[in-house]
Length: 251
Image 1 (cartoon, rainbow, N blue to C red):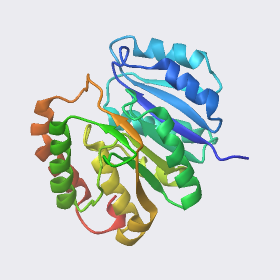
Image 2: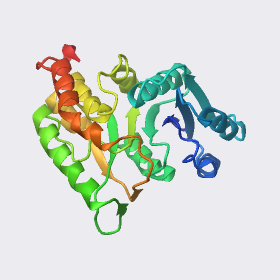
Image 3: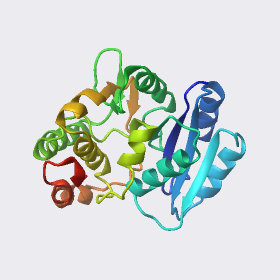
């Protein structure tokens, strides 16, 4: 049987940004990737809307709801654990609900993790010939400064830790998402650091790969505000303190 993937879509107050038709077209054309919408305690009509989307493809689209807003990290962790508990999936991953990366971008990543023997395949946003990566210059430069400084500080040498499209093998995801994350919004950076602690330097280098996206577009209405960037040093310090030390067992 073809290997199956569960793609988690974390949602918080997304009623104005959800593109239901794009999700439905995706599952009608891609047979081995299901969608799991996780409502992170939204205060608007998000849960009702994702229920309507799921109702049009009930065997391919599923929903879960957290009783209180717990942050993107916990929404994704919950989704991965619930999906894996069904026993139906070989791989799990997640994508941002606003589809800044179109949902079809998961297909080449899914092929890569299926054929390449990797434990993690992460999308990355690199503006290059043949790719359509659209973001404001200020966001780009802030992202690069952030990635360079904090990745060096924590020893996570990925080009783009914050891209919201990643895939994992099921068994490794079960380990990776076993316990809650300490950071609500630097979750992606913490995730890579946790993976490195679990695998060790050498295996991490061979089993984790970044794959440039063909298309990514900055979408307005981000939940992150400028004051969140001011909090970044404290968040990074919390992450560093949690994962300090060389031993795998500490993760």
